[in-house]
Length: 252
Image (cartoon, rainbow, N blue to C red; front, side):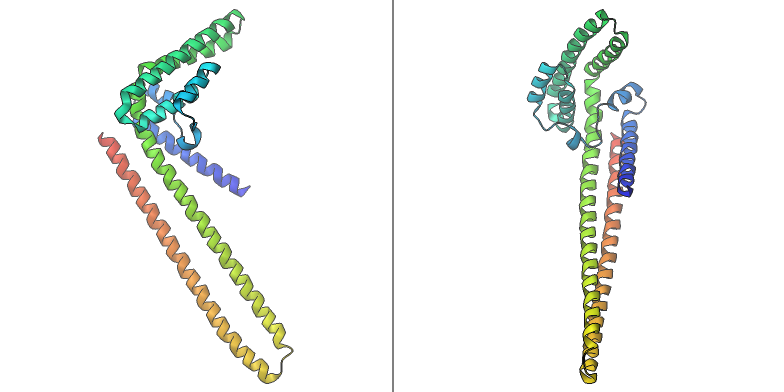
């Protein structure tokens, strides 16, 4: 339950960062912001289909739903500024195909008297017209947005990997401590059946073992401290990188 709450908080933080970044990139262009808030993804690598754009376009032709192809085209166009003109044409073509499919459906539902559905389709058609008219601006913002998001996704994945490694190390540390504790108890039980001299010698050996165990404990503590310092250093570097990229975006 606690883990789910923590994951939810992380998701909320990511959504807030996405909104702040998008607002920064769109500035005062409310229409562009509204459109892109529904078309850009916090984690594009997870959200956007791995299928090729050609396959997604063909699937859209059969189903009438070109949205997966549009998402793919915007993402690829954002990653390939040298092919910007080609992707503008691709996205505009997908918009026209979507408009055509929606107009046919709108005409059908109007005849059936489904006014709410017809009104919704009308809004979607207007949305697609906006996309065809503002494709260049859409790709311009998407390229900056996805550039930042991909950096942050990579940082998040590495952060999670470091966390898993720390948890494994802590679990191993606890396991070894429990073994040492069990061995000490076993030796105490064993000494009860010994003679005086034999017990005295065993106690000397135990003290040596306890010193060694304490040294190992201190070494593990120092290692944890170093890991925490390194994590803080990485965090500061990530924050500095975020600020530097933000200044770079503001200068463009």
